[in-house]
Length: 388
Ligand SMILES: Cc1cc2nc3c(=O)[nH]c(=O)nc-3n(C[C@H](O)[C@H](O)[C@H](O)COP(=O)(O)OP(=O)(O)OC[C@H]3O[C@@H](n4cnc5c(N)ncnc54)[C@H](O)[C@@H]3O)c2cc1C
Image (cartoon, rainbow, N blue to C red; front, side):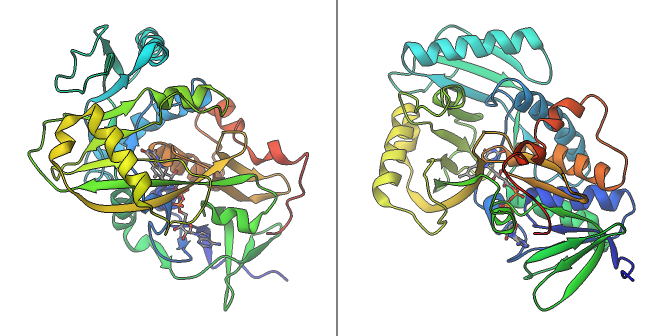
């Protein structure tokens, strides 16, 4: 006889996706356990920039989901779990050279046409942001987007969920067995029985299911000392990001860069995209090149000192879309991983939808097709899933 569940839902991974899911489940009154191999925000969520950006997303599924997630994030920030994590602020995209300027014009036209939470201004030149460096040909200003450091979001979700969520760390999910009434989790020294399992383990999901085409993509970031706040009123992002997402993997003419003014008066400058998964690797040549590029675009950076550098590792998926949905042969196991450089932005929506599925409610009306596009069933032609 199979034992009855100790808890309703177990979540493996206390990054921003797992923490958001835990909070949404607790709100629905479920008994939840969140398990992490290290601790909260130990991986990508604790070592990233936090742009909650719709404009930077690939048009289509990702842009629509980001738009819905931005709206939900803003709601959760109004006295809810994200009130100390999310802040709205303007953001700027800059273009250098004709290809980037054309990409910005196309983006501005598209955003103006579709309406939605993000409004756009495009003055045809660089006058919207005085102080930019020589060689910036075009600035587009966006209103309605925001910023949310991943570690603050994780803390906000877990603190607001209170003791409705049992925290288990350090403990690693090593495997599971699903049956008709629940899932038995193998945590090495112990087992846990849950009604439903959500695996939000970032790159760790690739150790459980090696057939998942997850690719580590490291990014180095810089934090400067603090100075007068407000000189740069919002994040300044290279149009190269737009090109990188629409060129099917071919590198853009110039490397992407984001210059983010933090509420402390510091700048966060990021980030590289490197083909490895080691968060300990920082190298000074790359950091110097990143800072040089950023200071050429935003000269006030020349007066700042670098006080910290760090590396985070994104979990990318070979086909460029995250993985979200129940496993084809285990309807009590949901996988949510592969959010690459978009997980902070998407976390509010993904947590809400994962909780709805675990509660048996199905996804929010209107999101069915977009979420179905992320389903792990797209890899079943090549793989058997079974127990991890
Ligand atoms: C340099 C950089 C810049 C970024 N900038 C942005 C940005 O501006 N905007 C944006 O939206 N996103 C950004 N991202 C992406 C974002 O940080 C990630 O998509 C997001 O944090 C992923 O969250 P997650 O919860 O899926 O995974 P993670 O944060 O990686 O969390 C996974 C957790 O699972 C745990 N774990 C792993 N294996 C197991 C196991 N077997 N059992 C138990 N626990 C396990 C880990 O310890 C970890 O705590 C950036 C990322 C990087 C690296």
